[in-house]
Image (tube, rainbow, N blue to C red; front, side):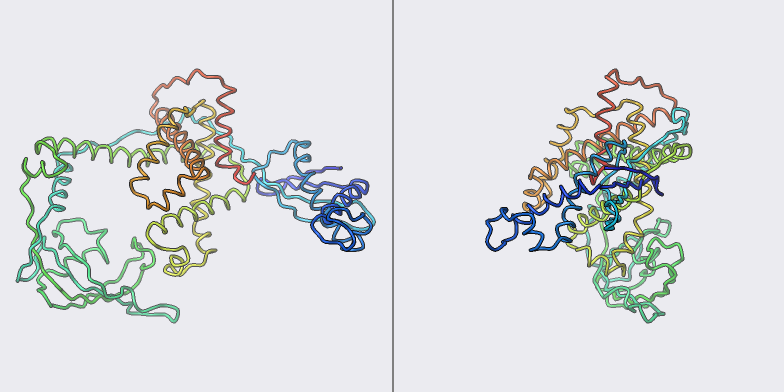
Length: 472
């Protein structure tokens, strides 16, 4: 066996394996024996037909084809070990040269394991400037609680600010191209709360400021409303669409908000007093704000590290990440009672369109994962078995409270549990690494854990392989 390697584009290697005639003849006899075992050859028991009989029965080309395939499977792992290649995943057999006047030559395209070279990430500094929760923020949260507890009563008068209306809504495009459906919204009954004039209505549906268009309408009143979506509309499929909506008011109701007092607090999860509710509301807002801020802060740190890092990874890694994104999307859609095909039809996309749309996100995910795993390795960050066990138990308990029985049974299977544990291991490692990077970015000293460097590197390498070596 002769082996040759040539660097290929996009962090791949072209591996050439030459099989001499002696090796091929040995492989052909083994292949003939396998063929004889699975075929019924007249006059012989399974597996007992002589080599020459098998050749005459199925033909030399069929035996040779199977021999080459079997040999390729056997020689490939030996070849990559001999030349010291570290593959990311399964190689592809790109070509076979089996000319009659020369040796058999196998050409493999081998994706290489990702390589990450960091700049001096220890010098990265990002100001940590989270704003404090104000009394106004707390009062707004309490007001939202009051809104949720409002008593709704029908009234016989034109609609005003703060009223809740039940309306029949439909919408069409004013201008339609041959490949478009004129209908934007099939007629449906929806509730609408008329927001105050100074309220933020940027996320209002079907367009910002819609509820203000209903002021002074009474029950059974109808109205046509025109709206041109801007080119930066958050509803991407509606950007630049000139639309017309038809509204019919079914009911106008007044909302009576409960008084903000101790009695109200006691009706919300048994708080003893309004002051206790206010304290808890502040704590919740602070937790939410910290989570949101730190997510953005983590991104800033990673972007700075990426500026000086060198990353090498094969295209197969991106394809695998895209498939992971699609699988996650499928799971979310299933929870909503939708199938992927239905989702694609609703968005007028093909599967290839969806993959193309996800490519940038997939590449960004890969880059961030490679950075985080390299930092984890450098900083000797580990996830303890106790931590994994506790988080796994907590996750399964929480899921058992919300999942249907059939999905819960699937989760209880060994394969699903192992997948869950693997996911928790990766998530916990990333969480601890991000925490370390936040300390670095703020100049906070953090002593490395005193554990064996060899053991730590081995553990983190295994965790990294979970993400990157999916096809091995």
